[in-house]
Image (tube, rainbow, N blue to C red; front, side, top):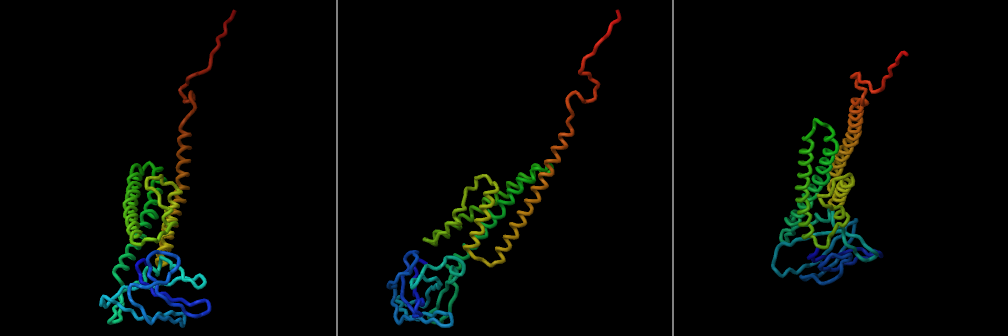
Amino acid sequence: MVGSQALVAYRRTDGTMRVYTSPITQYQTQLQEGKLSFQVSDLSATYENNEMIIFATLGLSNNGTALNQVWQEGGLSGNTPQMHVTSGPNVQSMATLNLLSGETATTSGGGSKLRKRNIHGVLNTVSWGILMPIGAITARYLKVFKSADPAWFYLHAACQFSAYVVGVAEWGTGLKLGSESPGIQFDTHRTHRYSPFQPWNTTMIILSVINVFKGFDILKPDKKWKNAYIGVIVALASSAVLLEAYTWFVVVKRKRSESAGKLPHGANGNGVNNGYGARSQQA
């Protein structure tokens, strides 16, 4: 996290420990060693029972009794620590430490950002992942039935308009999260952004669903939420397949009925003779 004053520790390939300080001023692939904005002494680290502990004496000049802390876990490239992932538990590991009592509490800033991420994910799922496909299904299949006219249009318009409004709110929370997290970009998730004025064909619906799953990969919520959305998509897809088959049946039956109701011209039973006559005379 940019602005953090980090204590970094890792175990080298030969088993020895390496520990140092690193002021994080920008997002980068490596944590560079450097002095912090406050004094740090007696810095050491241990690794036992698959657990790493950092020891240090901090000199705080503002006479404060509390500080905000974050903790992260990242990979190594040889003996060089790499940037940690920016999703899942890594964006939830933050708290306030009381230096007098030793107690910790979740920081309001971290909780606020997590809530925004969750809200962004829910809005994205509801707008692009559920309402838009329902609106498209309504327009494609219900308008075939004469009894559903014009109700299908109002239902379709309501779904699409609601999806657009919710989508704008989701887009706004995404911009806010982006401004609060400079340097962090999820290019694959952003690639599936498109104009709401484009025609909502099958390709657009597929891209919407893919975008929702990209969001799940970023947020990493409980598995039950992803499974629930998979259930919704399966239900919508199954309904679309059944409605597609039934729609074709209705259309074919209607065309046959219309064809059977039309007779060839002149064969309508009115006794009109369209041929010619001949008369014989005796000499």
